[in-house]
Image 1: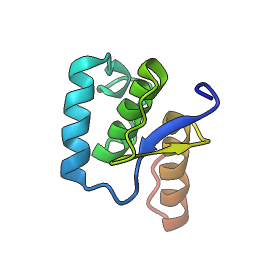
Image 2 (image 1 turned 180 degrees about the vertical axis):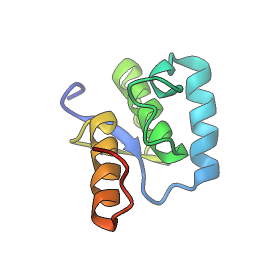
Image 3 (image 1 turned 60 degrees about the vertical axis):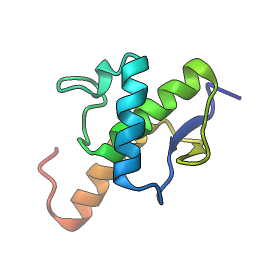
Length: 97
């Protein structure tokens, strides 16, 4: 099922928990895409970066820990950027395109 399914941060997961998960996973995996200048850096939030790292772990190791993550049918890198764009566009605060 990997490849067509992703694993992202649960909406109810706390930011401190996601930061802990992010620090751990990026200590084990190559998280360069969520570093400044990386293709998934924006939106620059703990939740979005954790979703990227959680999915990277899922894609590499097949692990989607349901204590803080949930399966998804949308690529977290593409989805999160588009979601931020549309939310800002609707609220009138977008400085993107």
